Image (cartoon, rainbow, N blue to C red; front, side, top):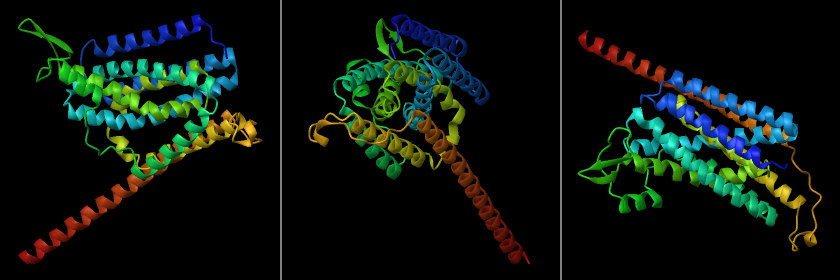
Length: 345
């Protein structure tokens, strides 16, 4: 898939316009984002991603469109892991709710720039070394096993990463927020505020998650343009998803297992692809192995199916546990009233 330079520039321009519209409309007057507002923005960004995918289908064909949608859905689902960490970071820095949207916007723009660099490096590595698919595949399977055992880590305490610590050590930082400002002037001297630090924390934290999400999407498409745009649309809708889901995230109790299954599936797909394109001399004398390749259509079915089953079963279990807890509380209250009446009698 040869993407002309003007298509890249037009796509980047369109993404910047979307971000500018979001920034002007939502941050023109800082406020706490409501669930309804977040829901409308999530629907808007999903619609934009769908429209983009339809455009890919019209101009490049169904195969590339399928790769985009599979990559987009995978990146969006894996980004839920980011939301847990974002919540922890927001809490650790005590970010006022009226400014959380701005923090997420700037942090995610930083993450998008860094992911773009990561994607470029990954694309070059894949073109030069086909055996890197073996490494990507094994790493994803390892990550899947780890995720299934440890979960998403939402209960972990936040510890500032090296970049945030360096910024705190090098830059003069105020001890409180100054509205939504990242930089302020006090007595003629410039200071950065905690708002600046939390933006760095959000952006760099997201880059750590790219360590598994970027190999995962390269397992679905090797087209840098599709890899970048799938990441861009997933990240742009992520901050609105943060406000929309809120406490619902903790109800998705089986989400780690679902994401682990997806990562393991893509990891196996990558290994099969590496074997199909094998060039390592110590494997089959450097010749490709006659193994089946997993189609993008089947990949899309597996990804959507796993996410749907995971969500439904999680919500069912949460509701069942809630009903049991409510029943337990009622039983305890009934027993307490009976004990009181017995004493009074």
